[in-house]
Length: 202
Ligand code: FES
Image (cartoon, rainbow, N blue to C red):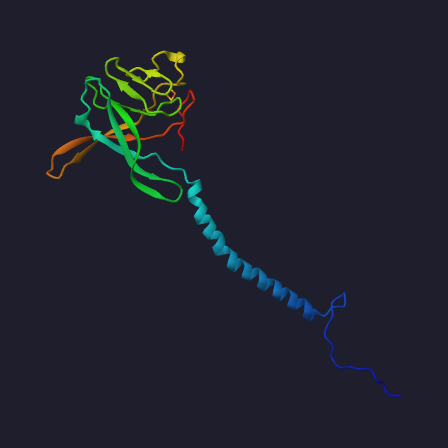
């Protein structure tokens, strides 16, 4: 009798008996899906990160040109100046906005004035100046401050601290006709209200 067994080549099989060809297809499809997902999701992730980054960017207090030094004579009298600066939130920049106000005071012989923000450290109202009494006064809850920014009645005032001073610098500049001028610049830091300590808001 002749041997009738089929000796033609068969597809190789795995241990579990499944064709190796199927397994190769599975890996190929999986690799294609993963590669495609990375190709699609990476630009989306980069876009989302770029969109959200401004939310976590620490904003810097603007340095603002407030006045000419000549506008602040060294007579110990406070002078009020609005503060105009570019303002920006996470995504938008608003040029030349009024962001607050300061008092500049220069005592006799001082080269550089002292700057106080006009924002009350109690709850943020604008502090006024009463020339007759020579005191700063807040209209909201009657806190009063001396010319050096200290609270007039110490802890008896509702304001938890004195008026906030701001860093000042004098910069030399030239006008169009070449005249030398001295400018007063202030780093306009916004401080939190209601605390004994000066804590910047940003
Ligand atoms: S906000 Fe100035 S005393 Fe309250």
